[in-house]
Length: 306
Length: 65
Image (tube, chains in turn red, purple):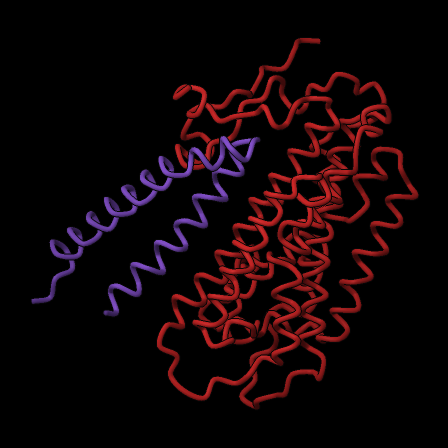
C-alpha cells in the first residue's frame, strides 16, 4: 500500500492566512502510530454520523455506542420537533427562505434531522391568516439546535474512534467530549485539560464580548424569531447564551436601539470565536492521545520569525 | 463621536479575534501572547486596506452625486 502524502505542514494562506495559521504537526493526524484497532475509514464514519447519529459507530463495529448516540441525539430532536410543531424555520424571513438557507443553523450538525424537518414541515404553509406559535416553540427550537451540536460531538468521536486505538485512548479524556464542554461554557474544555490560565482568558474574553453585544443590542439578540442567523452564531457560545435568553425572557423591543447592529455582530462573533476555542481544545486533546507535545506546536510564521 | 464609538468597538472585537487566533495557532500561552501585537497590527492594517478599497469603489462606482 502506497503511503499517503503528508498534508502537514500547511503553507500560509491555505487555512486562514497569516492571522490564523494552522500549527505544524510532526505527523499527519490520519497516520497514527497504532491504529491497528481501527475497523473503518474515519471520513466514512464521520459522514455516516452526520446523516444518521450513531451510524458511524455502527460502521466501526460499536453498536452500543451507536444506539446510545442515536437515541440521545434523535430523542432531543424529536422532542424539539414536537414542542415546536416543526414551525421553527418559519421564523426566517420569506425572502431568505431558500434551498440552502438552513445550512447556517446549528441543526445542520444533525443533517438527517434537518432534512427530515425540511421535507415534512419546510418553511410552513403560505396562508393569509396569521397563526400563533406553539406555546413552547422556543424550547423546541433550542432542543433541535442542541441536537445539531451534540451530533457534531458524536461525529468527532466517530472520527477519533476510527483513528485511535484503545491503547492510545488510555492517555486522556476524549477530545470530542472536551470540545463539547468547551461549547457548553467557554474555557471549560481548557480548564479540564489543566490549561487554567488560557481557560480564564477564553472565558472572560468570550463571555465579555457576548455581554457587551447583548447590552448594545438591548437583549434584542436573544430571540431566534427576531434575529434568526445572529441567534445561530451566538448559540455557539453555549450556556451563557441559553441562560441569558431564558432568564431575560426575550424582552420586546419598545423603541429604537442605537447600536443594535454592533451589538448583534459582537454577540454573534463571540459565539463564532468559541468554535476556535473548541478546535483548540480538540486538537490539544488529540495531541495528548497521540503522545505528542501539544505545548510545543507553533505556527509556520512564528517558526520563521524565530 | 459616533465614529469614535464604532472604532472603539471594532478595536475591541479585533483584539478578541486576534487573541483567539493566536491561541488557536500557538500551543503555549507565552508564545501566543507574544505574537498578539504582530497579529493585531496585521489584522488592523488589512482591515484598513479593505476599508480603503471599499471607500474607493463606493466613490468611483456607486456615487450618486
